[in-house]
Image (cartoon, rainbow, N blue to C red):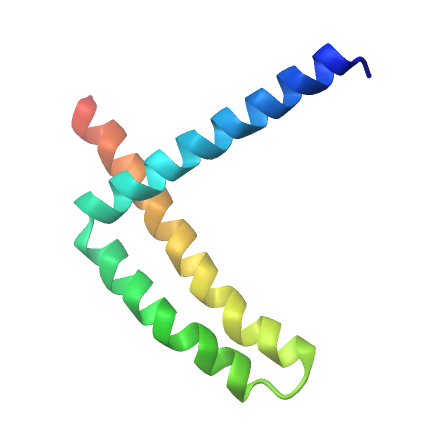
Length: 85
């Protein structure tokens, strides 16, 4: 891969991260349910890490928290599209 191609890939990755951060911020500011789930996640993430005895138990306790946040963001996106139509 050429140096110019690597720079364009890095620039594209940084742009994607910026767009993701904007979407996260928009979801946080506009969705009360997302704010509630995020605040509960802040409490339950350390709790899941502390309660899990093995690595598998920790993953099984922590993963659903992220799944709930992802599904809420997808729900917000679908609602925004339906509202536009």
